[in-house]
Amino acid sequence: MAKLLNRGATIPYQLRPRKAIERNIFVDLLKKIASYDKINFTDYRYVGFGAAYLEDFKQMHLELGIVAMDCIEMDKHAYSRQLFNNPYYFVNSYNISSTDYIDTDFKFDRNQIVWLDYTMPRYFRQQLTDVETLCSKLVSLDIIKFTFNSQLRSFISSQSIKKDKYRLCQETDLKFILQFLKDDETYKKYLPEEVGVSNLLNFDTVIRALAVRAINRGLTLGGKNIKFHHLTSFTYADGQEMTTITGVVCTDEEFSKIIDQCKLESWPFLKELSESESEFVEAIEIAVPDMTVSERIEIDKRIPAVDINAVAKELIFYYGSNDDEHIN
Image (cartoon, rainbow, N blue to C red; front, side, top):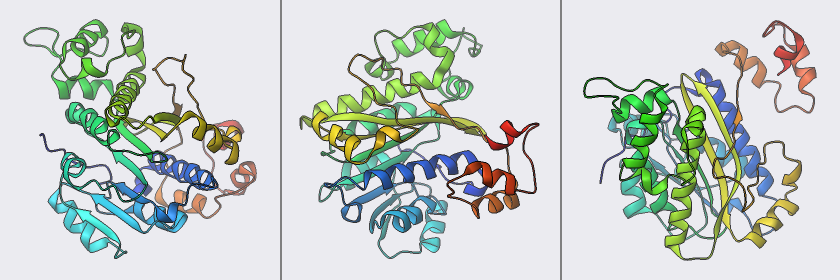
């Protein structure tokens, strides 16, 4: 199988404010889910891509008390830094691809939170295959999150989608791009039947639709009578455009109990999907101003906070051209 380069966190979080916000929202969601009486995250394993900094792993331990952790990093140089920077004895580091981890090192001894933070569109075929294989191994109350590069321009160039023998497609050549997806042996397995040119105008929705199909195919292969229940999706850009999709694996009845006990109906980022809804999942855009490191540190001192308006007023610097832009 192809070997995936996992370069999800080679840039410090303080230089990627939108990704940091999205990660914090994910942790906030997990803290809410922790109130469900059948979930104890101290008994869970966290699996993800730690790169050199292991920021996600630090937060998962500090916020949720998780001590069973598997960190995947294929790049040998990032892996060497990861070993040096690892603050915890309980983080098991694997210098392998996510494909190899899922195939050979995935464990079945406990429930898991798995976040595969992919960034490279060149390997999107293998990423979808990995998602399917992973989901065939999940059990009820496992939580999954996937990040994908959703920039259409990068997808065209990385996949070498050509309008003719000599020229790559442009982002406006949607018919050629759609035909490429329908003809490709991998993508056509995951592409919704109703996909049309208009869907490609929001390419991130197509990426998430492909991921949902991969998730559902995997769960069907697993044969455990459990389903993927979508919780939230985001888009953001710290350079490249990225999209995420997050959900819990369980029965319909269990999911209803999670929603009720954890009071997720009042969580502003929840997006449940009914049976009749389209596979083209809508996402929430994270758009914040570019911040200097000093600005980010100053804001971090004041959060979490009950009143975001008060936090905005306390700052001695100002974003945007009016109060709404500054606060939002």
